[in-house]
Image (cartoon, rainbow, N blue to C red; front, side):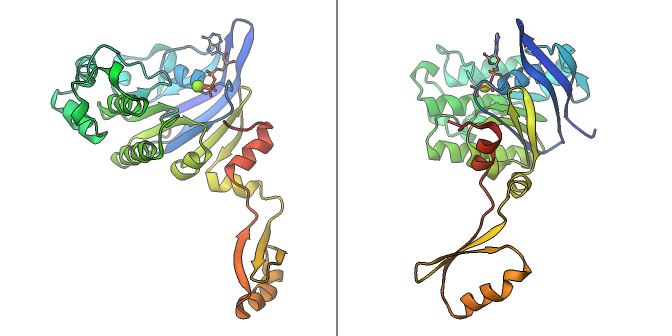
Length: 282
Ligand SMILES: Nc1ncnc2c1ncn2[C@@H]1O[C@H](COP(=O)(O)OP(=O)(O)OP(=O)(O)O)[C@@H](O)[C@H]1O
Ligand SMILES: [Mg+2]
């Protein structure tokens, strides 16, 4: 199969409001795909359509070659998902939350302790969810999402509101899932996370994909200045064109050991997205 996820001209209305206005996207097997965009852009709506929780008003939405409007149970067994509200049972323990899921998804019991260990929650296995911190809840929801070793893993803002240590653990787990062969579809407001993790990202703005590519490609595309910014040890700042015509001058500074730092003017993802959406990602 060429793509595990494919959307063609997907439109979704809520009442009379058109929230998705013709979305096209493709995700290859085993890639980490990041969907970025300001709050209210329609990211969660897209995940809900892809996971069969919502239907599209118009267009085609496919996962593993199946229409997401009529998913068969075998497709659900190949999917894992962590939604933004996590969907955990507050009164059940970590272990029992996973046990319930293991039953539905026909996952062997032994896998429960394994995933709890993976997210460092083995010691909290018997604690009810109501007593867990936000970071622990996120990790539990992630454990549940990967328990059935899915072919496609959906993560709606997996690291939102977590401390750097928890974020790093989640990133490691996402990478591990990719190594195992899973495709990962994630949304995030964190540009650094997107740059670090994603093979491809798409920027959704007001219900439309306005940019797509690898993080590097996108940043280079918006490198309008394309200059080298050199800071010299004497405090001067020099901007040179990023090309062979600047080579002699750069060499000269380097030979005279005058250089403190050299940077290209390539913008960060954050800058690109601010330019495209006119909004900051908070
Ligand atoms: N069930 C619903 N009924 C009516 N409107 C909805 C419903 N679900 C979402 N919307 C609207 O659709 C738009 C997109 O919402 P969505 O949750 O997909 O955005 P998002 O990109 O995930 O935002 P965030 O980054 O804040 O999570 C919003 O204007 C929201 O109010
Ligand atoms: Mg959302």
